[in-house]
Length: 180
Image (cartoon, rainbow, N blue to C red; front, side):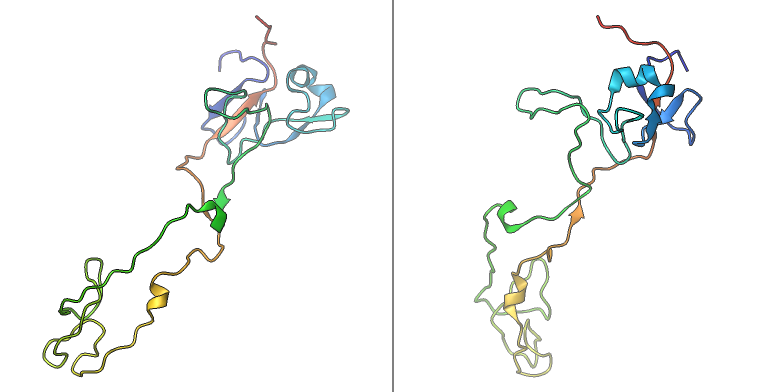
């Protein structure tokens, strides 16, 4: 690797952190042994600021630029946001309706489907129709209320974009960056 800046973060496809680098896993480091890195990042990512300081924790996270931009909210260095799962509440779902459509035409199929509407039964003996017990004239009771009900059961759903597992590493040694 080229000579990095102290505190530089890189993606690394290896299963170990090379010498002079550490995984960005939120670990704590002693200030006394890493004073140059501490001078750059301080306790932004954890630690007590007396004996220890933390490195960024990028496990399961997507890094974003700090600051703001047109139409964007401000991001503070070290700020975490987002969740891997999300449970929507009724107040988060836009108001909308679900129509339950039927027809007055004669039915001609035994079971509902994506393009089949509940229909008026015809001769159930010779032509089985939707909601009629085949071979009889008995109308099959169906609970229609369950066809348009709330869903989710207050269970969380995945909120993760497609990902690829790699390691972020941070340089512990190297060139101390100078301000422009």
